[in-house]
Length: 149
Image 1: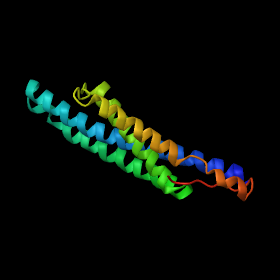
Image 2: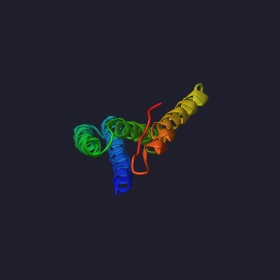
Image 3: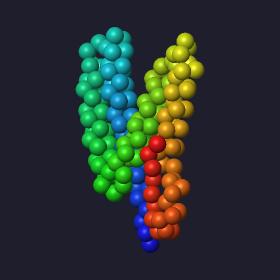
Image 4: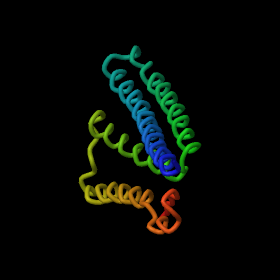
């Protein structure tokens, strides 16, 4: 029963962190998209497109509020450090993918290797964070212990 509860808590940490990160990433993408569309359409069509910037900012506020709710739920039912790490990782991934795919931004050519290395290190850090502690076997099968590297 305790092992099942621990597994459920780990799933909540992952789900809540990923949800929060996705919502935070969408928040920044919505604000950027609204401002970018407003700028491009105002230059092309004039004043009627000015409403897109506030619309993007309003969507950003809604996504951020929902992200805070998801993250708080995860921290209430799981470990805060894991939830926040998942949220940060998914926020970065969402922002990068949205920038590259939807907003047509480019990966810096001069620092591409450093950029890829930094993403790999973030993923490795998350993997180490949730690695099961080998010393937990000494405490009994129902005890789940994690260590932070």
